[in-house]
Length: 562
Image (tube, rainbow, N blue to C red; front, side, top):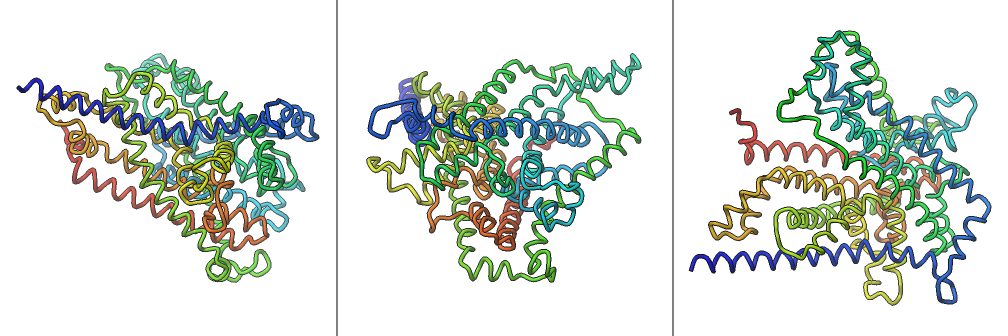
């Protein structure tokens, strides 16, 4: 009787897995594919009914369209060209040298992630604006326009490129460098022949991420761009300013094309990537070289000062009474500018949104990844469809997703119309927007667990979901905590994904910063930005402490030396 019992339990597990995968596919179809389909239909739908490409022709022939497209492309390319070398040598100093304070430099390099992209734009206005401290450094040029956009975008994209390049430079075969030393190869030759080729895939990925982020971000050009025309700002003007949703859909499709192209290039390049460490490889260990380490230390210190100067100026501006005329320190902007004016509710909304995003998004993403990686339930076409939908959000900018949510959920005939302008729709948008990164993190953690666990549990007549709860989840707990932290912080800081979805009662903090800045309330805007940065920092610190506790209490075996 043992055989039929095991077979029956296996069948039940597979059926339940198939059902859960089907529900995940329906959810992703409803909240990802349907909004994207609504954008496509909205761009070609005629006012009197039927379909036409007339709106595309009107947009391309409109004054300023070619300028906005060209500006978006060359600004994104320039930011990519500046950010890549800055992040590469910073990562090189951390991973391939014996520079002092490498851990500190790593933390500082990630600091721009703690706040919205608007933080850099507002701070650079305080540094280089009309009343800026260092406005003379621009030699008479204005920070409002391409200069300010490039500076702010480099600051915002720097940590994204740094994360990728830290991984790319984190592993190398030491035998290659030993052979180069034996042949008396110069440092420059080793750098160009070994280091750069080994990191080329990381460089390509970082370039695509920076380019995609820059061309799709609208917060930075909205705050510091002045009258400089950018596609992302054009979407905002059409949707919010003119309530022209169909015209916004046309621009959204055009904005989607370069981002998807960058995503496809990165995907094709990654398919060609080979392992940098083989079974016989010897991990590279950096040697002390005084001249190199000293130069890299100075480089990292200068960049760290610049990064901290951006955050520091934001915090300082929030504490002075009236910049730059009355520099007396006070908490007036926090008390009167936020609390008494009722704007503090936006901060509380963001806490609710971020908490719900982490609490709801983390189990959904991780369980779906588990079903794809560890279970055998579901039809092959269903598994392939879920896998494709899980990777698709990486190529969809936040503003494009927001336009799709408007066109789909705001339609009067949609039974889900009631979700529009609620906290729920904002939470869902955040989960969908950041789904791919969390999905890949889950798959990486799950792939490190041998399938023998499931095989043994099946032989012992234990349900795979019991194994998931007692074995898989504890082993992957650090990755689960990382996903929760990632979702929380991004939900606190995102602007583009939610700028079209809020109501007066669900206004998030990141959008309130934009509104306060637009109203000329720089003090309260910087106070709100500082609160967001501090909240993200506290959550990151709590994550680090909780992760260390998990490792010590539940995963001490990882530190056991054999």
